[in-house]
Length: 63
Image 1 (spheres, helix red, strand yellow):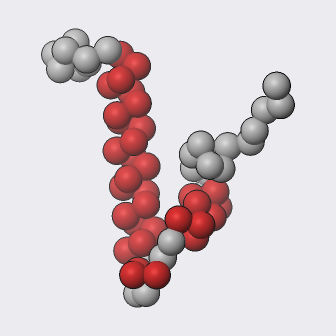
Image 2 (cartoon, rainbow, N blue to C red):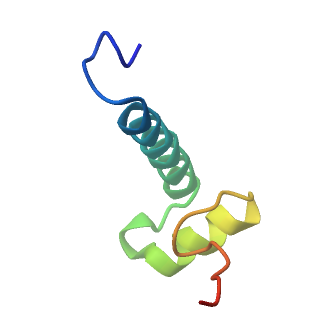
């Protein structure tokens, strides 16, 4: 598929991952009536509960 779109394989899979993440975020927000006050911290917490890793929820490595 990435060859048809003339993008690199890594960019294709990164975009696919971002699209899946966006769908999950919309599902989380859609479950709550008070969405105008549903901030980043609550979304990250909800994502971590369903074991979705983001840069913000991924464990950090010491250098």
